[in-house]
Amino acid sequence: MTVKTLKNSLDILECFATTENALGVREISRMMKMPTSVVQRAINTFTETGYLLQDEGTKKYKLGYKMFLFYDVLSHTMDPHSTIYELMQNLASEINESVFLTYMDNEYGVTTKIAESNKNVKYAVSLGTKTPLYIGASCKVMFAFLEEDRQLELIAFFQNKQSKEEHMEFFETLREELQSIRQQKWCITVGEYNEHAFGISVPLFNYKKEIIASLTISGLVYDIDDQREKYMLDQLVKVVQQIQSHISKL
Image (cartoon, rainbow, N blue to C red; front, side, top):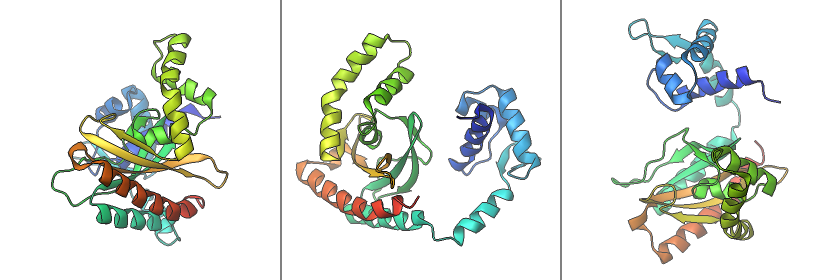
């Protein structure tokens, strides 16, 4: 059972993982769609305990010294994520497209690692980006492996102004696609999440064989054709087979 106050506080802290800039209370309030009073209380606690520091000049906040204690421990630990990122970078270099890792976080997929292509013009994905689970290749390939009841719950969560019948109707339009994704274990979308971008995604599972993440190749739509699509999918599947053993340790 989630402790709402604690979850809100952690969500606020995660805002600082998506930018190198200092953040103000009102800025965080807009980002999180939370009252400024709630944000201010959490910020005060994190500042008092050293997890955040306040700039005396701008009155904005940034990560504090306490966060480096965690980094020091992680940097001396065999972190599977370092190997995963190395594999992602190798893939991005091989295909010259961006590769990103997305984890399932309740109703959303969250981008946690990015290996970018060397192209001057490319489709940019930002760390910490949250996307509804049934939209775009990186999320839809996870959505397809959820139980049907959970899929309907998520549709209702994002389309809360619609009736139960409308939720079912929307789900029926997805059912065949989801079944296909589940069977083939990959998903390709073109212009779905962003009209200028394509996504090629493969699911990742934990040691219980539960869906937890996905690995995705993304680029601009004019850079893809049938032959290149097949080549990139083949390369992605090979890398996912290597990454899967590391993901299972997390």
